[in-house]
Each structure stands twice: as C-alpha cells, then as structure tokens.
Amino acid sequence: QSLPVKTHYEKKGLAHVISAVPAPEEVFIEVEKVLDPLLGKADDGARAAAAPPAEPAPAPAAPAAADEAPAPAEAAPADLTVPPVPGELPADSTILFVLGGPGSGKGTQCDRIKVRYQGVVHLSAGDLLRAEVASGSAVGQACEALMKDGKLVPVSVTIQLLKNAMIQSGGSFFLIDGFPRALDQAEVFESGIAKPKLVLFFDCPEEEMEKRLLKRGETSGRSDDNADTIRKRFKTFIEQSLPVKTYYEEQSLACVISAVPPPEEVFEEVKKALDPIAQLAEGQE
Image (cartoon, rainbow, N blue to C red):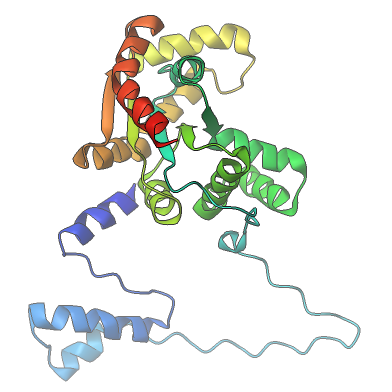
C-alpha cells in the first residue's frame, strides 16, 4: 500500500528518502538537513530537547564455550538468489502482461490466446514459484518457509524465475499471466528484463467475480474458493494491483477490456488489441 505513495511523491520531487539503518542520532542529522531550510534552525536548547535520546550501548556478549560454535546468522529474505540460466532473451521479444481480479477470466482468455497466436509462451509467476518449491531446491525450500510464515517471497526471486523460464523456452512472444501484482514488481521487471508491449486488464465488478469463484469452488477443490478468502483476495487486488493498472494507463500501454460478457465476446475485444501486435511480431521474425 505505501510504496505507491512513495513513488507518487518521488515523481513530484517531494520525497526525501533517508536510510533508517544507522543509529537514531545519525538518522536525525539527515532529517535536520532536510528540515532546517524549511523550518529554520532551532536554538541549541530546543535542539537538544528535540533530539532523540541516545540508545544505551549493548552489553558485551558472554564468551562462547570452547566446545560451543557460534550460531550462524539467519539469512534475510533478500539474500535469496535464483541462479540465472545461460543465454539471453531475443532483443525483439514481445512481452504481454495479463491482469485482472480473481475470477475475471484471465485463464480462459489466456487459453484462447495460445490457440489463436502460434508460438506464444504462456507463463504464470505463481506456477513457476510453486514448481520451484516442488523441486525441493534450496531456494524452493526457503520460499516455502517464508510463505508458511505468511511472509512475501522477494521480488528478485519471482523476476529471476520468470527470466529463466523465458530464456529456456526459446521463444520471443511471451504472455505473462497474473503479473505484475504490485508496482514494485513492475518496476523491477522493467529494469531487469524489459517493458511490456501491452498490458491486458480484464475489468469485472466484484459481485460478478465473487459469483464466478463461488460457482467454481463447488467443483474446483481449491481452498481459496470460499467467501471469506475471496473477499480478502479482492482487498489485496484493489490495494496492490489497481495502482499497476493506473501506472500502465499513464503510459498508454494498458488495454482495459470488460470481462462481464460471455468469454467469446470478451475474446473478440482481445483480438482487436493483439492482432496488430502479433502481426508486428511475425514481421520481426
């Protein structure tokens, strides 16, 4: 929720980002540099009263017993790295993002896109992450532990899994389903891989999506197809994914399509958006 606010004010030149890692008094020196020109310097007495109290120095650690090895430091999630695969993406790669709320019909439309447009490589960030966990790799085990604790998998892991899959596919026309889910994912993908040619956004009212998901839940066996979880998914989608839609609309890269009509009618609108891009991609081969 808050990162889009930071980005918004950075674009306006109103944000000043200060590292909070150093000691509080060192952080406050940086705060002073920003605020003094705005508010004027306070006198020394007022400054001393306003300054945060210095934190007491930590007590020295007791020496470890001779037969007791020091405990290893716990690796931070950001330390997780997916080894890159050899190779590069074609310079003329065409990348399409497919976004929409849960139950908006993204999967149905992706299936139709794969049939109509030959050579399309369909990738799902969620499927790739689940496959990495199932593989039992060190990265997969670490990601599984994070998810069980309710923590987020680092963006860099998701991006590298996508990039590896794109390179290994040997393709150049990519359909990336359900990604990016948040602005930071979009920004990291663009800086590390490329900008999308187009973003398909399937727009559907919550009431319609909830009705579809509850119907699907009667036979899907999915634990997240229940009313309480569905509403939580909607909340996450609104808070994190709608800013992505706005971000790409501002760049004229988003094509918003109503997902309320029957799937075949929705696909007619998809074809109008993709046919020119597919013809351009074929001309580059």
